[in-house]
Length: 89
Length: 451
Image (cartoon, rainbow over all chains, first blue to last red; front, side):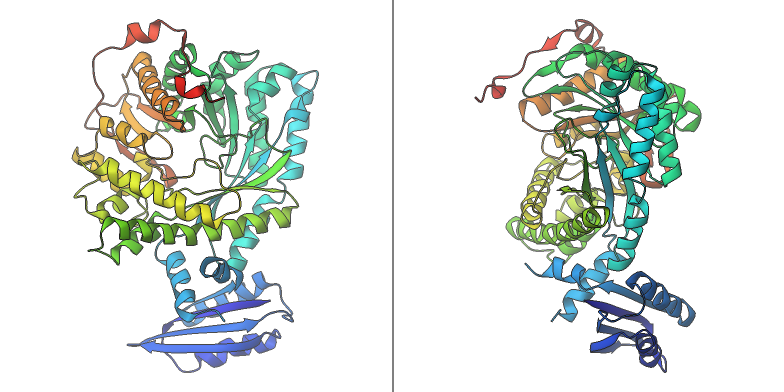
């Protein structure tokens, strides 16, 4: 089971490390990361394996969104099936 | 591997273009809640609703969080209460109060099914329920009511049409202090679908299973943004773009419907492929029509543009869901659509044009504010016109008019929230009273003889 973590916001030092620290603490394996910086905006998409995650997905989403609020970023955790449903036949 | 562009597209649709699941509606049969008296029947209804829908809100919130897609409303649709009240007796309003209490306790937004199906005539209990609608809507918060007065198979019950004209007036009068909200929770149908998840017309038809999950999607903003990308495309390109977008929107609805059904242990019913607007900026069906090239919704060309939109939404959506049902198409509720409100205020959108549009959209004259002194006969005649369009064209049509008690042309009514608000629209002032006063039935058209 995989989830997509998306992070959008103003670029700053340590974003990747803070998000991946939460992943590591909850046994979420990062499968793939893409990131880009458009002007001063940072956009990162992380595909993660949550099959061994120690938290329910909804709580992981809450934890990430708390981090987002604290850091002034927009962080969303979404089950990969929403993307598969929408873009795969 | 999921493509980054696809991920960003989905996120943008949700965050910026108002893609959401408008409603997860649990249909619940109350046929086994009949009893030898109303008190006992209400107990059984309360028990059944709280048992089956007890986790509805919690499950929807969890799904919403897991998939990152907002689910705006959690609703229930019930067996027409006229049937239950006919079997168990008592005052129909008692049933409404019971259901309202269950909704309050479970956090459910709306319950549909304070309904009667009278397209061919009144059975026991039907007339009593219809006459109690204004009181039931005034005394409850969550109850929605609908009455089916005609169908292609049966023709139009003009006695019921006449009665509904006066019931709509009374529903507005009884809630005059709350912006006449009663009339906004009451819809009159021709060819009512039995699995519609949208309010105010949702009810659980007698042919439905005991309990079922139906989902209504939304997303006019997504369609408009997609069309923005092809400002010079011809109308074939426009239709293709709408189909592709409707497909994506509906796939999300299908996913949520299947998940909700699985989590709740209830069969999946249908996805309703509807474009349901909200008064929020960027979530308007009228703006899609304007994006296609109309200066303002309501001008010449609007009916053609809406026909294209409605058909493309169905074609795209039908491929994306295993079971499609309900109303399925584009909604044109005037007060709930920022573009329609603006068009009506500017005078570009008139009741006559709206009536023409209902021949090609999925519902009918929806959420239209009319003057407070509009007679019951005029309201009935509008219902009759709309029902005739539905009857002859094998389609659902509906009427949800709000007589703004104490207000006239030039004034407006504001409900706030999803219901929005809008100006009082001008009607034809000549009287249809003698036609409505005749009563009887308009016979089923030749189109009904298909066997």
